[in-house]
Image (cartoon, rainbow, N blue to C red):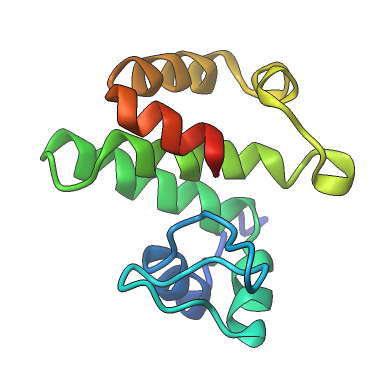
Length: 127
């Protein structure tokens, strides 16, 4: 009997839930939700997130979206990060990201994009 259970790192998940997924030019790290930049070790932990952690995080974000507890831009950042890390040298534009996505995630990307305000669209482009 093969065990197909996947384990999600609690430390990685805790840090990802507090991440903004926007690189700061001054530190080359993300920030905590309160605005503090990640330390270098925290950024390394966040970047160690695997598919299991990122999938679990996005599933939680989808639930929070249904309850209006997060903004669509936050969920969109998590979704795109899942694919951005799979692109060699992390050098991807939106066309590359969309091409890498499953049909279901591409539909979710479109739905979340449509829910953005003009200000959020500008913020997403700048991040």
